[in-house]
Image 1 (cartoon, rainbow, N blue to C red):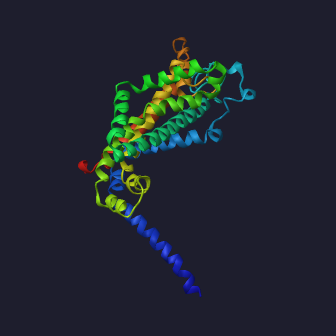
Image 2 (image 1 turned 180 degrees about the horizontal axis):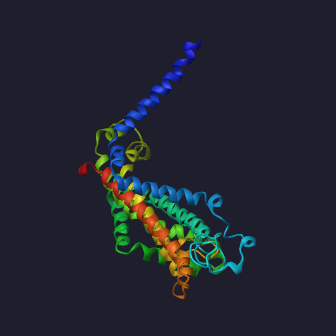
Image 3 (image 1 turned 120 degrees about the vertical axis):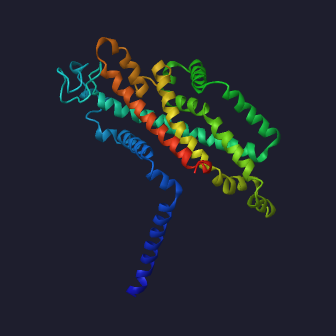
Amino acid sequence: MSDISKVPAQEERGALADFIHRLRDNDVWYSFWHTPMAMISAAIAIVMIMSAVFAPFLAPQNPFDLSVIDLLDSNLPPAWMEEGDPRYLLGTDDQGRDILSTVLYGSRISLLVGFAAVVLSLIVGVGLGLISGYVGGRTDAIIMRIADIQLSFPAILIALLIDGVVRTIMTKESHESLALYVIIFAIAISGWVQYARTVRSSVMTEKVKEYVQAGQVIGLGSFTIMIRHILPNVLGPVFVIGTIHLALAIIIEATLSFLGVGLPPTTPSLGTLIRVGNEYLFSGEWWITIFPGMTLVILALAVNLFGDWLRDAMNPKLQ
């Protein structure tokens, strides 16, 4: 009886060992462990993302809790400077909030906007790309002409246009309560084209292959063929675009917030913190804007470098 019970456990260990062995032999995995820049950028990005996710546990104070904020502690320099306070490692802002805490919480909001915008762009772009490439004809022409028109405008201008239209339709109070969703929608709509064009070209290559023709012969519907058979084979480039688009989405959100048309001060992102600190930059309180700015640059650079490596690693022509 005991020998029989050992068989499933042995099979599980064998399957796990086989998976690890195949993972080691994977070209992308091998390239990752032999590319120092990829490992460093991935490590930095993961640390910053996890720090933002667990900000309530890592931050010295909650910058949104008025009971722990003291205006008498406003504009204190970093702890290592002459007038610094050991309680505030990176100093405080004009409201007495700990800069380290505001950076952690601000990174949370920036990453939330970035990830949500990328997911929404991916869903819209992949869906339209599948339909355009598989159906073809007039449908393909209409979708691609819309994409061509949108490509003639920078993404930041499209996001500004959408945000401006929403501001004219809604009242100021309503817009502030929905500003997070508006900015996510604006950034997502400005970025779906790259996904659609990439997926369309891949679908046009895949739909003439034998497995698609076999599915058509046995009576599978177009939707089933697109979702179950073609989509898994075109997702590789999509994830590469998504990684690079994440850094771009974070920068666009920071730009809009810095210009004052993004998130309100009640939900400060890195861009909002930089804008607020910029007002005190020339009066000597440089730390209020420098540390959020450095965080934004390092985060965007790490994600971009990892995306560049992923693009090269998944391109068979560069192997």
